[in-house]
Image (tube, rainbow, N blue to C red):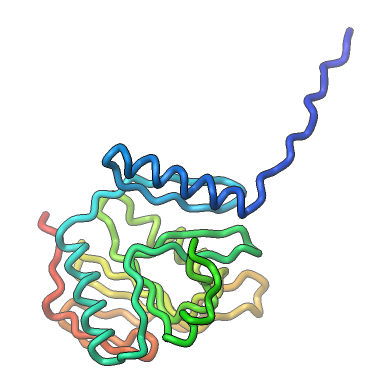
Length: 203
């Protein structure tokens, strides 16, 4: 009986290399007329097809306008990557909000550094709600984002997660989630937004 040949161990890609591959994937898709997100986790790139709806885009636009109107030093980034290179994590958020100081402190063009972000907002997609309610709810506290807001046009609800806690080993949002419905005034970190005109998905 002969021994099975042992394949040489292949070196793993660095986070920087994965980031470069992710950018190439997004650029290739754009040249083909497609919109995709390329996220990084566990030494893997995950590609998500994008098909933003009108309600989705309108909610993001309304959030941007309200936050910038009430705070001239707030910086908003719709559809922007947020990462934590030490953790090898990169996600794409529907909206990131930062202070002007934190934005100027950043040194990378590839993504916003997660601990510099004040608020991350996701508008739930009808086709993949688990990405916002499960995956990003797990990853955003790990990355050090202090406030995570989930806007869900399926049922007209908004949930604000906050209170970063690392005492248990795995970072999580320790505060009781604050739950709102469309029409409420919602506190998102230091900013406040009115949600009465947020559209819902048509069923």
